[in-house]
Image (tube, rainbow, N blue to C red; front, side, top):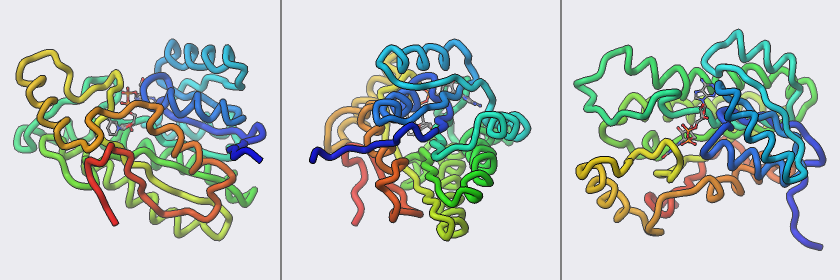
Length: 258
Ligand SMILES: NC(=O)c1ccc[n+]([C@@H]2O[C@H](COP(=O)([O-])OP(=O)(O)OC[C@H]3O[C@@H](n4cnc5c(N)ncnc54)[C@H](O)[C@@H]3O)[C@@H](O)[C@H]2O)c1
């Protein structure tokens, strides 16, 4: 019998799925038979991904809400749930391009920008879906974190802190809800070749920085959404029932652990 991940129509919510990594995850989940709720703050992006999935014969619907708003998230999860799985993907600098900045040049306004989406967004959405999962005694939560939070990256300190916070939060919640058959894991990404490219080749300095960074990758390229989607789809699937509280790097060998 062929190996297959099968969701049998189970509903999954993917946040920030209107482009980049989230879009790749949403499409992969749909191909595995999930009914995917495609969240984004940008209706045009979410609608386009829903169209793409439907064109491939998959099931999807758009859900426009801001993960940084507790009220909006609760209203949406009440209206659209219950969910079998949540993928906390919305992250990064949100609607603005990510800025590499020395910590000493930042202030709480900058920190809030990163904490709101990368940490509070994860808490809000997890809070939104968990009651339904606990009631049904099943569920999967996968949160996209970053090497920035695992190993520390210069000039991304607030982002690194928010991502490390999200990873720690997942482990704590994993311990709380394992007894209900719910698993909670993190997938930590290296540099991705997505629209929010951290090293746009716009300037000579950035091109140089990008080339230097690339030399640290054993697989000498940045990641693609497809590189990430398979593992997330597996962790979100019924198959991954005895894996919880873990953080899996998907980073072309940028870091190696035991
Ligand atoms: N791009 C990278 O190099 C990289 C590296 C490591 C980790 N990550 C993480 O991977 C995830 C996906 O990154 P990406 O590069 O695909 O991001 P992206 O910026 O390309 O896409 C994010 C999507 O989220 C949406 N969004 C923004 N704010 C939102 C909000 N408040 N509520 C709902 N949706 C919102 C945006 O409209 C966009 O469509 C993020 O968590 C990011 O931190 C990215």
